Length: 66
Image (cartoon, rainbow, N blue to C red; front, side, top):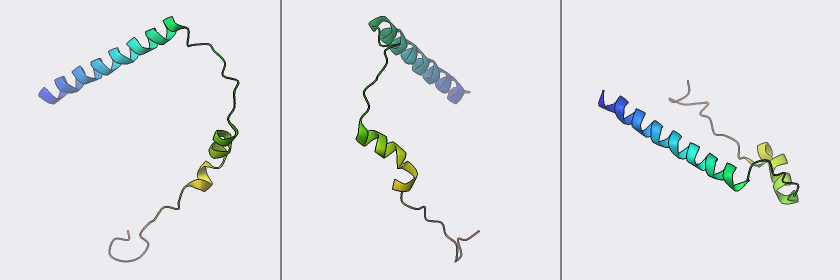
């Protein structure tokens, strides 16, 4: 029971913080602004995302193979 109360209190605190940040951003006029500036390096990095990751290592032989 204590863990559920702690989780509920933590979740309520996080939700309150997120709501507070959203209200602050809304009052500051940060919503609805179009960001037209594109960084070519960021775009190239986003486009090469799957290829830039190293291959995953999966055990295929031995006692750990499933």
